Image 1: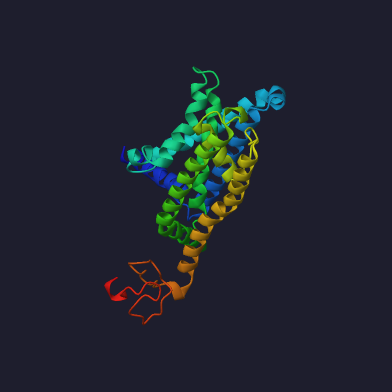
Image 2: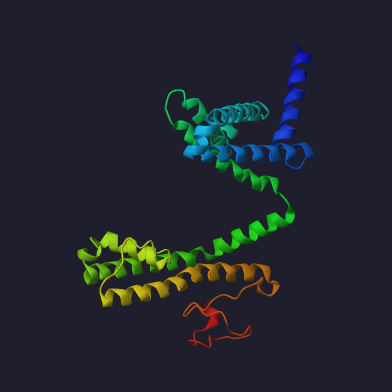
Length: 278
């Protein structure tokens, strides 16, 4: 009996190294094969919605989906039995995604059309970040993460400004254009403002009056600036993180927020506020 337990323990250890050992050759190969299966599965789900392709190759699509589901089921079980704390994996983000990746095909026995939910397997592609666990890749990831975290305050203020602008412009367009031009309500006018401001321009609603067209032109031009601002904020933070000269940034003036004062300055040259009180 102890020998059987020993064999099982060795089996669990080998499986753990292959499945969770991203730094090992076998582990990286396993992850690459897994990603290939995930991509194939997502492709099959998408092609299943193409009427002509599905009608011609329906049998093969279903067969491949069941094969992939079977492999994912085996992988899910192996992940559970190969670790000491299985519930930690089961209720983790990746554990829930892995579970949801195999459920839709089994549900198709009871609920017609539920197999389309297999597209949730695309979330498993997030495992790519574990595979690309290279120091340079990880360094870039942390730089971007830190830049976004440092920019969140400015971006929040900017988004707040955009929301207020869309409400004001949408309300104004509702008054100027009216229901006869398709601006049937303020929410509908706000929808038009967002579509125009983001330079998408569906064309389902368009102003007909000269004043409305003038406002629309202003919104279109404003849209280019709105797209550029968040990019500029994040880019500036990335530059601060990557530039050694900016490793110790200055404390902004508590009165006006200026940072471009000399290192030995005692007073802000913008507002004259004492920098010693910052």
